Length: 117
Image 1 (cartoon, helix red, strand yellow):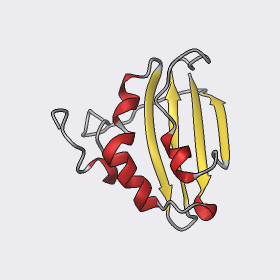
Image 2: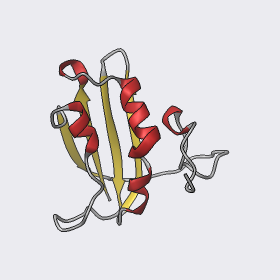
Image 3: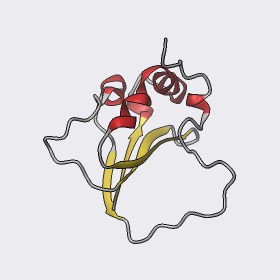
């Protein structure tokens, strides 16, 4: 397994954490559900540091021929991630939890449009 983290320092962008949350809510999350090899993707925000990004956990990393959803966040922000790092995952563990499904959790997903819309 591999993990990747992409962070943007939003200081040089007109985008804000709130505007990027709207992008996720409107269109940014769903396309990632059909990416082969992607086990989990979650988007993160650091309001005090004015940073925004994503963490991805991969069962298998995509090769350069694997189609990925458009990186519209980079387009909206206006520049590539300030930092992009890939790691080997040395171990994983799931704890005791009450919600068996992680899909759809977080402020950006509170009002996701339905599939029919």
